[in-house]
Length: 141
Image (cartoon, rainbow, N blue to C red; front, side, top):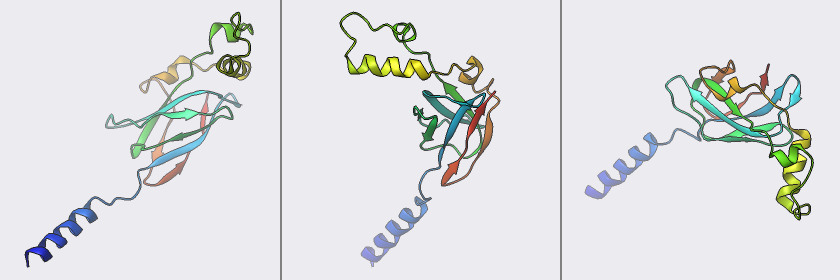
């Protein structure tokens, strides 16, 4: 009898905790029609809960794991590349360093975005997130 009760209790607890996979959001980030080539997207729910970081890939696509559900505001931070990369001059002796070369490549395709998108209170990008997989392109203006 005890064993049966214990098994039923475990089953009930397991079922209560099963809500499916956490919501995710993926899409493409553009600014004035051009793909944003780097940065971090974070979604902020109306209740203040935030998502994990979603990293923007060089083709402008992003993926945010564990997003809050409901209406969210999207924030995006896309800091400029290092000064040497913007100047297209590698530091002395580091021209063949893979990290330096990657930074210079990133600088060649960097798209600067307005600073307002760093702040959830200033960002005008808002949309609904539902359970499961969500696809949402983010167009910055």
